[in-house]
Image 1 (cartoon, rainbow, N blue to C red):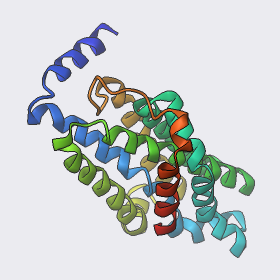
Image 2 (cartoon, rainbow, N blue to C red):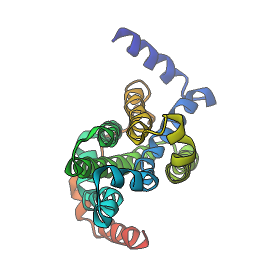
Image 3 (cartoon, one colour):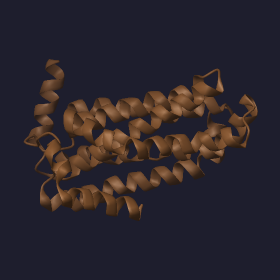
Image 4 (cartoon, helix red, strand yellow):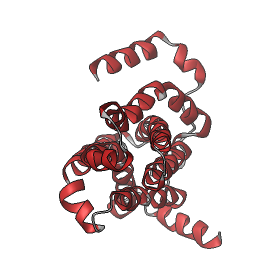
Length: 231
């Protein structure tokens, strides 16, 4: 505990310069990867998984649609969790759920267990996405644009890697076992979550999430409906 406290003090002292901000930016980028990569990598592996479990077209489609559906249905719940825990703790909780749920898909024995893990994955993303946004708005104004760009780069690159690198790169690298693909990609999310204990990726004076009364403001509701429609 003393070592972690000393490390945090050293890094906090260095936040003013580039060396102080780089670890925080790296954490945001890594967290952004896990917003879509665990979902996108499911589609290339879908036919292999369906063949092993005997899934029909509906079951195969559910592998990718269930996590997205739960993410959309749980978005408001995820925002409330972020408000309750705080942005940094919300990011950590989301990453832990994503890492465990996504990796669990590789160790299931029944199709229903595979879908339950996908549902949990979607709920983890529903917590992580608003929590990351909550971190960004607490950065100094001069660095918000940079932090947003880094986070979005991880987000988009996660989509590309999940969809494009799973079959040609990841699957051969683990000996052709799709179960190990999920484990190798997903479990490092736990390391990213642990890293937030040492480096919060947000200024120390940052408060917890927006109060619940903010959800009753017409402007907040209008922004949510607008962004949802655009998505």
